[in-house]
Structure formats: structure tokens, C-alpha cells
Amino acid sequence: MCTSRKKKMFHGKRQDICSYRYKYTLKTPEEKRAASPSFSFSVSNMYFAVAKINPHQTICMTTEKLRVAAIDLGTNSFHMIIVEESRGKGIVEIDRVKNMICIGRGSISTKMLDEEAMQSGIVALKNFLVLAAHHGVAPENVIAFATSAIREAKNRLDFLRRIRDETGLKVRVISGREEAEFIYYGVRKSVKIGATFDLLFDIGGGSVEFIIANNKGVQLLESRKIGVARMYERFISTDPIAASEIKMLEQFFSAEMVSAVAKASKLKVVRAIASSGTAQNIARMIGSMNGRPNKASLNNSVFTRKEFQALYTTLIPLGSLERRKFTGLDANRVDLIVPGLILVDMIFRIFNLQEIVVSDYALREGMVLHYLKDRVNPSNDEEHELDIRKESVYELGCRCDWNLNHGEHVASLALQLFDSLAPFHHLEAPYRELLEYASLLHNIGSFISISSHHKHSQYIILNGELRGFSPTEIEIIAHVARYHRKSPPSEKHAAYSILKPMQKRAVDVLSGLLRLANGLERGHRQNIQNVTVTVKGSVITLHVTPRFEPDIEIWAAEQLKSLIETVLQKTIIIEAA
Image 1: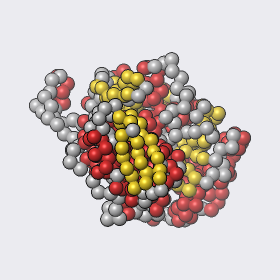
Image 2: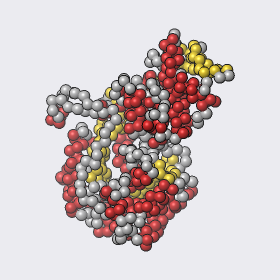
Image 3: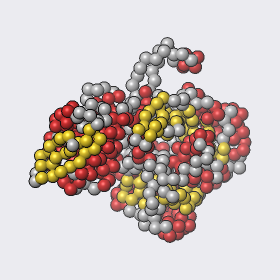
Image 4: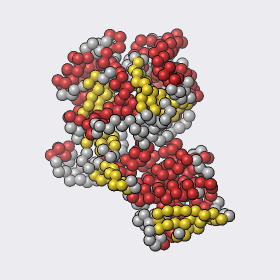
């Protein structure tokens, strides 16, 4: 059931990081038609590729771009994302739109698509195609898939023919298993999947897809007809929902998830990853209840069983008017959130989970990734483990035109310092990885301005939508980059002051190490090759091995060593080996 028939073409264009406006002379007829004699464009949408020169050097270079639009004709809404791709760099989102068509309105029981909804859907698709063309997407690179409601409708062929005749768009109806497969492609590019098996689930309007996978591949691909619109239409007739209706929904959900539960138990699944608007709304509401700031991206955010239960017991007894006032709940989901909450509650209970991770990527992103794999590199099955964290860091650096040689060398020195000084800082291995990424990205704020570029770096990292990281990890990376120069960490800085004590300790240590490493690369000439350490009492001596005279590097490091000396409570001496 759709609770709002208000159409809104632009759900909100995503503001890209590193977006600054430059004057540009129009050259092509398309550009001249699209804008005035000079127009603005987003630097983040300029096209870069990552080209491997050797194992120790990576550079960014401009290359010919490929833009793709992916349209998902879902039960509740039609979505489109537009991305730009390069073989080495991955994908960068250019735009995204959503229109609440509610094509499944009434069709779940009748198996017939509503005429008004079909007409609205065709209008929305026409607008999508105009937008895609405006962004430079060639018609052959527009892909469109239809899911549950259209898949089951008796008049689907008539609707698909009308779309083809009126828009020229050829829509492919995919099976539930294919839908689950595309969701898997999307999620694994957004959340790091490890050696242990995870349960992936996506709550749609007509169906819910379940996937069980680890970094070696997939063990379960399953689609069940228990989507929130279908369940609302079938089971809910009261507001607030009656206890008897909750009981019927719980029983139905349990029966439909039997096979997935059995497989998860056999594979010892302990973590779930959710990739749907329902899960994102739940995460936002939980964040609001707990006083956490509302962030544009929820990727890799986590809500626990305890946090969810607090939301569930608060929201379920409320009527629609009271639910509508709840911060974090999309107005279009005021009714559909009820079966969504009951389903997530059952998933927590019968899979015996303690937390759920949220993925920003799902079906549409998976569609794009699968399309590009087949188009660009069909021989690569991509079943190897993806290092999405490092890939995402490099993508962000390229978007901001970084000095990669400098960043990589600073990272190498910082990691040597982390390892050599481990007996004194006592930070565990995961922080080593965060130091590497902060080192790689510490200077990207120079893309905005050399002045205060450490603060610009912090902002870009916080808002750069890095994939595979938890919000806490992104906070630490951003703070470490921010403190690589100028003022040290201070309680006077609002963002730092609200960190937890262990996070502050990590930022203090890592930013101190980064300052020292950055000083040892002061000349941007990759002069210092190795750093070794000797300790005598309270004095740590760093022996640096240079390629040539290291006076400038030693001088700079001496200026920047005070923070790490204070944190470790040691005196540091730097000398050439």
C-alpha cells in the first residue's frame, strides 16, 4: 500500500564532494544547448582513472568517461542512479532520483497494475530519461529492471509495451533470484564481507531477498513474497495495528524464512547486513532516539538488538498520525514501517542476531556493477575478495586530484613508525589500517585551498562517502588527517571533544605519528626510505635512511615531533643512519 500519492521528481540531488564552480568555455553543440555561454560543472564529476605503474606507485590520470543510468521499477517507487565509471577508478555517483509511483498499489491481490499508476510511471520514466541525457548518458547505456509487482502482474506485458512505445526504454523483468544476486553485487561493494558468513537482506515492497555469503562467494540466494506493501495490504486493517495482526504477521514471516534460517544456522551466521529504505529509516529513527546527528550516508552504520527493541516498543503502539511526527521516518513509509518493524524484529529473533549493519548499496548499484562487468571486463568473475576500503580511499583521492606519490610515501613512513613504536603506544592492528588511510588522504584538502587544508581534508573525508568503513572509523581517519599539522587535538575543538576516550587516545597517537611522518617527507621528494628505532631509557632515537642529504626532512620532523613526544611521554631524537 502506498500512503502518499504526491509525486516528487527530485528526491534530492546528491551534493558531490570536491564540487567547486569554474568557468568553462562551451565547445560541443550539446553543451551550448544545455547552458549559457559559460556554465558551471562539478570537479568531482571530472573523470580520473587509477593506473598502476608499478607495485609502489599509482597515479591518477584523466581518461575517456563512461556514464551509465540504472532504473529500478520497484513495487513502491521507481529509482534511477547515474554513475561514471573507469576500469581502474570504479564508479562515482553523478545523480540519483526517486519517484513514489506505487505501481504495486492494489495489484498484490488483484495481480493487475493500476491504470493511473502505470500512466504516472511512464511520465516518471520520461523524466528520468531526460535527466540521463542531460548528464551525457547514451541511450544504449540506460538499463532498466522491473521487480516484484510488475513481475507478478497479469498485464505486465501491456505495461512494458507501453513503456517501450512511449519512451523507447526496454525494461527487463528479473526473477527474484536475479534480484537477490544484484543486491549481493551491490552490498559487497559497500560493506566489507569477510571470511565468516553474513546474512544479507533487502526489504522491498513486494518481496524480501535473502543472501548468505562470505568473501569466497554465495551460499544462498532467495526471494520471498513478504515485502512490506504486500504484507500491509494482506494483514493490516487497524491503526494502530492490532495484537492479532502482529501475531499473524510473525507466524507468516517465520514460515517464509525457514530455509534461510536453517542455512544460516548451518553456516554459523552471526551478522546481518540490511540494504533497504526500511532499514535506513529504522537506523535514522534509532539515531534520533539516541541523540546521534543525522547523516546523509548511513553506510556501515550499526544498530543493535537492544536499540531496535527500544524503537519497536515505542513505535508499534502508535497510530499513523503519531508515527508521522517521529524524527527519521520518511513520510511515505508511515504505514509501511509497521510490517517492516515486525519483520526486522523477527529477523533479529529467529536468526539470533545481536546487530544489523546498514548498506547504502543495493539493487541499483548491483545492476550497474553487473552491467559494467559484462561490458568492460566479461572474463573477470570478480569472486576474489574485494578490498573496498582501500579502493574507496584511492577513488576519493583521485576525485580531489591528490599528490599520490607524496601520500603513499607518508603512509609508508607512518606505518614504519606505528610498528616500531608499538610497545609504547599499545594500539591494536585495526588502528594501523586507519593510520594508513589518514596518511594517504591527509593532504586532499589542498584541492580546496592550501590555507587550512588540514581542516578541508577533515571535511572531505567526513563527507566523501568512503565505503567499507563504520562511521566511527571515518571519524578517526578524518580527525587524524585534520591534526597532521597546526593545532594539536584539543577539547576546545567541538568534534574532537565528543569522541569517546579510546577514540581520543587513538587520534592523539595516530595524528602524532602522521605529523612525524609528514615532516620526514617535507620536501615531497621521497628522500627518507626507512626508519628504525633504538630506545634508551626515556629517549627514543629515530634513525632515518635517506637517498641524499636529509637536512630539510630532519628539520621539519623536529618541528612536528612534540605531539607524539607528549602522548608517549618520551623524548625523540632524529638522526641520519
